[in-house]
Amino acid sequence: MATNFEVTTRRVVSTNPATGEVLRELECVADVEVHSAVARARAAQPSWAALGVERRVAILGKFQRLLHQQKGEVATLITREAGKPYVEALLTEVLVVLDATRFLVDNAFGFLREQPVPHGSMAMKTKTGRILREPHGVIAIVSPWNYPLSIPAVDTLAALVTGNAVVLKPSEFTSLVGLKLESMLHEAEVPKDVFRVVVGDGATGAALLASDIDKLVFTGSVTTGKRIAQTAAARLLPVVLELGGKDPMLVLDDADIDVASSAAVWGAFVNAGQACLSVERCYVHQSLYTRFLEACAAKTRQLRVGNGMDPQTDVGPMIHERQLRIVEEQVEEAKARGARVLAGGSRLPELGPQFYAPTVLADVTHGMSIMQVETFGPVLSVAPFTSDEEAIRLANDSDFGLAASVWTRDRKRGEGLARHIAAGTVMVNDTISCFGISEAPHGGLKASGMGRSHGRFGMEEMVRVKYLDSDRLPRMKKLWWYGYSEALTREMEAFVDLQFAQRASERLRAALKSVGMLKRPRL
Ligand code: NAD
Image (tube, rainbow, N blue to C red; front, side, top):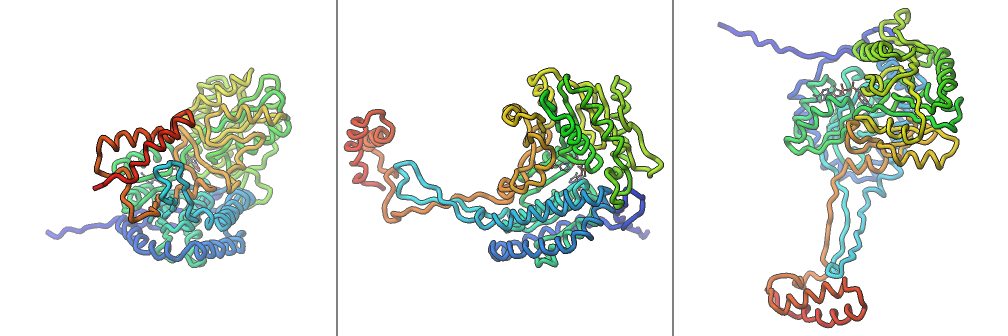
């Protein structure tokens, strides 16, 4: 009997979250093709590394010019596929990538330059050492939808400039932005096999993780991050995990209410709250609490929600129904447990199925899900505190540790408090903008992940450190080689004293006793 083998192809659908319009349906790249992309990347990587940093920097410069020329087209695509206002697409994606490229172009050469390692030990003075930074080989990047250009592009550019080949799996919700990045890099003359985008879903990401890669840089949820860490551990694959956040904002008793409330509103609602660095918990000193809440509620009510292509829009749609339901459930639970809704608090069906009103919740308590679990939606949850110590305790009592902010008129006080907060980044009198500082490392602790992206620390993730040591006296047998004897034991004791005895006279005596070592016969 003949059997029909049916090959089912998975598909991803790119949709405009503001309108529901299907932008494109794409087939997921088959597992075998993922593996072959990695194999081709591996074959192409040595020539890319051999091209030299100057040439690679020139290619990044060309990419930067292309992105600058096409900024409008790219930002439009981001808004259509991810929903954020066009102005945010320009500011938080295009500008971030242009500036990260500037940083890499300016710093890659110095970063990859061999770094001398002077030796302090007297026993090692005949040697000269250097640190080499070598590419890992093939770096896989798996990225989320919320910053569909800036997250994969910054990691990709750091990997490429340091001599790696890259295979990128963009989010299934923002494949088109991933493909646009691919076409611009190819146009900038990154060879096709050196950078490849594999479109697909979670299973495609899993296939990439299972392939012959040298390192994985993952940005996404804690759940997926943990799954990836388990798989990676089995083969000791190095990973960078940029995961979720529950960032606290601490408004101290001397803060400027007008400034801090504007910051809270922007920090909680930018990208409809779908930012890993967004303000998810706002703690306000009791003395300002009521006035701060009134200011936040008044400003929130003025926000215009709608299609991100409308220049008047402040807040766009959420990415998908699942994310919206998480927000809805958390808000409902908070309300049921006594939180007060000062603005928003429900969907906006008149605008479309994926819009949720920017919401201000007062009197939230620490035990509510909305203060514990990542919300990733347009909700500003505010709770009072009575002392700096209490604020620090509340901020740190979290599974997450991505970033935090402290608001005060006294910078010194803010910086002092920042040192007690367990987070990868703490900003004093600003929030989120650290992501746009190309020199600043980005990454978290606890459930927010491990490793860093951006800046010099981001570049460090893309290289293996090799220590190269060269002996200046190649014809001399080392003093510590075989031919051990009673005499050597005494000379070695003296050699230790020569370096570490407390008194100068002791060290001088030891020097005389140890010289015999130089002449002793060695095997
Ligand atoms: P997600 O974990 O659902 O997906 C992220 C990526 O992983 C997608 O490309 C997805 O296809 C892929 N994936 C899913 N399952 C996989 C598997 N088993 N193996 C390999 N890849 C797999 O996350 P998301 O919903 O796209 O993104 C939102 C999350 O990302 C939020 O938690 C947010 O805080 C986090 N995030 C973190 C940062 C940061 O820098 N720390 C930045 C942006 C977003």
